Image (cartoon, rainbow, N blue to C red; front, side, top):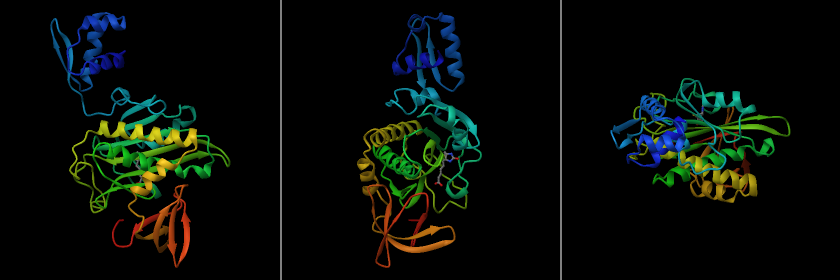
Length: 323
Ligand code: BTN
């Protein structure tokens, strides 16, 4: 009911809506309407109430709550279920805990993570309200070895979601998004599978949106949307990415069409044409990146020999810089 009332108020877009209209439309008493409004206000919404005119939203809180995320979200699969947390260990850990019984497309979002995880067991800083920390639960009917492609979809959807809002970024294959040579976003794709079938995939995405001061150990490597001069709302970025993700994901799953995703990955690659180091465990070797295949693998040349790298197996570093 609370969500319905909020939607009515948001639909009116800063105009007054009377308590009577809300109570008639939802079949509840005016005092029940008032109680829900009080509750909505407690969540941080500024709502003006004027006798004989009714209620209007003056300001929405800068939170990624279920209602705000679902409001006008243009998707058919992703975000039909949104789990919102004020704080959590890791959205990926929670997603994996509930994945078995969760609907495909369920999204877990938290304002803060106390045990945010990056790839290779690294820690992921996830300060309250500073960024987007979310995980999506997917249940695609694909083979486990095809799962790395989901990371490409995530990367492509971040880049094109940001582009729609006027922000240019690049993909440092396979799972880092960078602006001006610094990392703004990272993807952590995890799999629950048997030998020949996937039970679920959890795609975790972290994006630094408002962070200005980074911890000493990542200061030189990390940036945020705000630090790069863009004053965007987290909610707009989040929705843009989710909508792009669904578009590319359904193309892949329903039509077996990877082409649009690969085109985005190639056109916005931070590594094609560059010399890089390939890191695999303790091993480190130099190569030149030449392409990304139709499957999403990175093509490198080393001593005149062409080779394909599968994401998930390796990490890469630039020969001089981070990229
Ligand atoms: C990386 O760049 O190494 C991947 C970072 C992924 C961070 C996100 S934040 C939401 C989700 N929950 C986590 O614990 N990690 C991912």
